[in-house]
Image 1 (cartoon, helix red, strand yellow):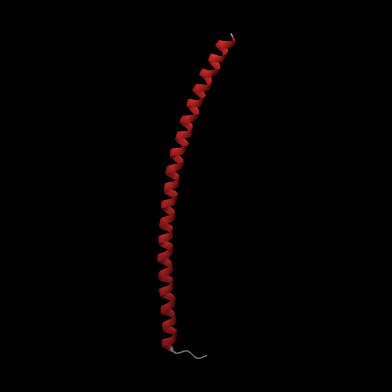
Image 2 (cartoon, one colour):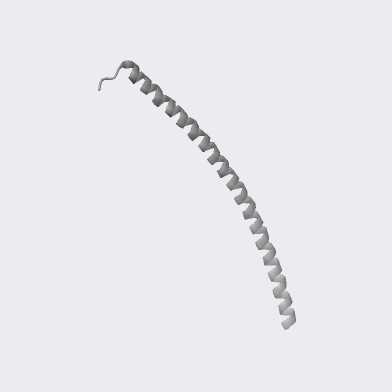
Length: 74
């Protein structure tokens, strides 16, 4: 099939337009993924610090409970 110069030019333009559209789409997707990663890091740090604090408080309560139980058994 013979193609004219204008047909080839139109196909090249279509491919360039599609590539530009895909580039914009991927840039937007990358931005959303970066934001999701940042949000996840933030909440992971928050939850980790909260769990550490709770673990230390539970350890304190457990030590106090064990001390009281030793007093009772003594």
